[in-house]
Image (cartoon, rainbow, N blue to C red; front, side, top):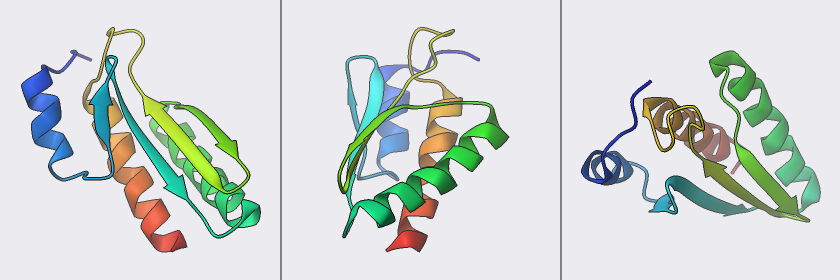
Length: 96
């Protein structure tokens, strides 16, 4: 998978307004009503990650989920990251 240019990444992020590009990765943060809702979203996201065989760097503190996506093998953001970000957005929208 080829690393995307900064311009390509920014163009894709126009459709992902919750995401930012920084430090060679795309990032987002979601805040849920409580830990249970956050963990539920993380569980659903985990299944999508497995299906796409692409896994985020992520962490949560109580009801806040931080996600960072980059394709380590390519040394930056690829279409795999964009596709996973789109899937994550769909999952989080369903949770809300």
